[in-house]
Length: 532
Image 1 (cartoon, rainbow, N blue to C red):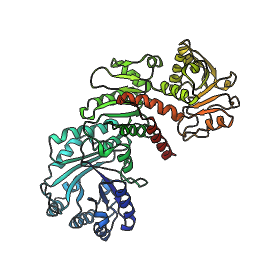
Image 2: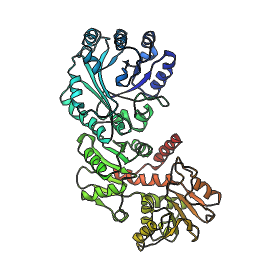
Image 3: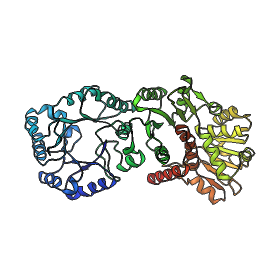
Image 4: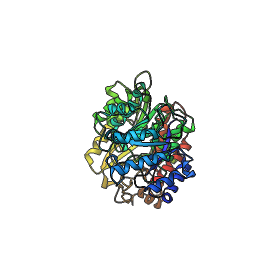
C-alpha cells in the first residue's frame, strides 16, 4: 500500500511537534524529518521522541544542490547523516550524487544500513534520490536504473520539475515499465502544477509513498497537495490500479472545483474512479498530444474529461478528427465541454453547458420548458458560455437578444442561431434596457474573482422585480451583479447552479448512474468557501 508521507522541517523540536501532530491527526502514514537546518542535538532529540516515532520516519538532511537548506560544509553534512543513522530512523534519504561522489562515506555508511533483504533489524533502510528543479532529465530512466544498481537501496526516488502534462505522464509510464526490470520500490514525482497527477495517482501506481502536507503548512517542494485533499478529495487510500481516470482539461486549471464535485459524487455512489486536474497549454497541438498520450497509457485507463477554457473548440476539433459521435445541439453549438472514451466503439462528445443553464433556469424559476420558450431573454456577452446558452434557448424557441461590447461578434452569433425555432437578435451592450426582458443572463467574466467589484453593464436601472437575473460566474457565488439585482427586487440565480447541473450531465455520462446532486452541491460549496 502506498503511504502518505508528511514532510516536516525540523529547526527545533518545539516548532516541529505541532506539524507532526497535525500530520498524524490528518492521516499521514509516515513522517519525513527534514533536518537540513537542525543542529546535532536537535536531530538526536526529535528521533528520541515517542510521539514522533509512533509513525515510520524518513531522515533527510538535504544538500542545497538538490533543493535543501543545509548551510554547512559537505563533510559536516555527511558526518551528521552518519550520526543520524546510528539513531535508527526507519529510512534515510540520500542523494544519488552524494553516494556516487563520496565512496568512502558510502562504505562507512553501509554497516549502519539495513541490507536489501533485511526486514528484521532496526537499521535504517536506504532511499536513494535524485532531484532536478529545472526540468525532466532526458536520461531519467537511466538515472533510476543506476540508482537501483546500488546494493542496499530499498526505494529509488526521482523528483523533477514538470514543464507540462507530458512530463508528468512520463513518470506514470515509468511506474508501468520499471517494475518489470528492477525489484526496488519506486517514487517518481513530477513537481509543480503540471505534475500534480503523479502525487494524486501514486496509490493507483503502487508507489512506495507520496508527499503531502498538513492543511495550512508550508510545502517542501512545488505542487505538494494537502493530506486532507489526497485522502478526502482524491480517495487516495481507496485507489486501485484498474480505476478509470477522469479529469478537467484547461489552462489554467488549478482554480477548478470540478475535482471536488465529481470525486464527491464518485464516493457517494461508491464508483471506482478518480477525477483530476489536467493542465494543458492552449494550442490545439498541445491538446491533441496530451489526449493521445493519456489514451496510449493502458494502465492510466483514461475514460473521459470535462473540458474548460480555452479548449472547448479544440475538443470539438479533436472529436471531428477522430470520427467521434456528437449530439445535434452540441454540433450546432460547435464547441464541446465533455469527452467520453469508451473501451469499445467511437469516442463521444457533448456540450453540457446549455443543458446546465436551461436546467438551472427551469428549477430556479419553477417554469416549464414551454414557459421558458415564451420568454424574452437578454444575454450579456458573446463568448463560449453565451454561445452554448443562446443555442439552447433558440432550440427551445425563446426570444433572445445578445448584448455585447463588440456588436459585430453579437450579430454573427445571432445570425448563426436565429430561426432555430426561436428568434435571436443582437445589440450593443450599452443598449441594455432599451427592450424589456423577462430574463437577463450574464455570460461575461465580469464580477469573477479577483475582479469582484465589476459589473457586466454600467446601468442596472432596467432591472426590476418582474425579472429573473442569472449570472454564470460562480466565484463568488453572490456576485456584485446578483446583489445589485436582488436589491432591485429581481429573482436571482447563482452561477453555481449551472456549474452543478452541467456537471450532473457529465457525471451520468462518466458513470452510467444517477448523479447525487445534493452531495455534489455540498462539495462545491465547501470548495468555494475554501477559495474565498
